[in-house]
Image 1: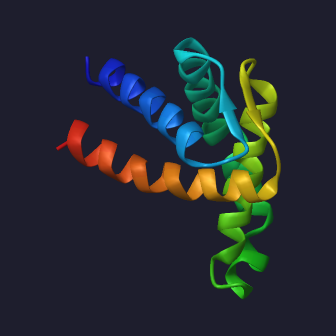
Image 2: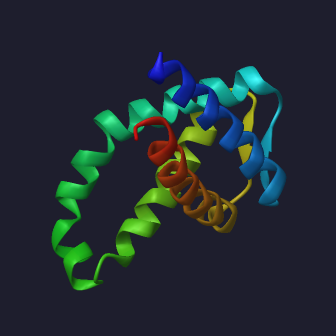
Length: 112
């Protein structure tokens, strides 16, 4: 039950991000739910490999490369999910920062 609630809240967060950040467009709620699944799969399979490969550079940049990686993975999710469009890096960067902040709130509410 908590998985379904968090999935719905993340979809609402994606719609909010599309409303807030210029350059991010979501066609409908089902597209937002699909991009949540795509982001989850990217975070499970692709993100750990990229973080492991870029660990030395991320260490040298004091973790700032992690923000760039988040933005690039957010762009990838927008590219893979139909009905979701991310215009460029700046939109993806702002969207990934807002999504990170909203995920802190969602996780603290759902998994208290």
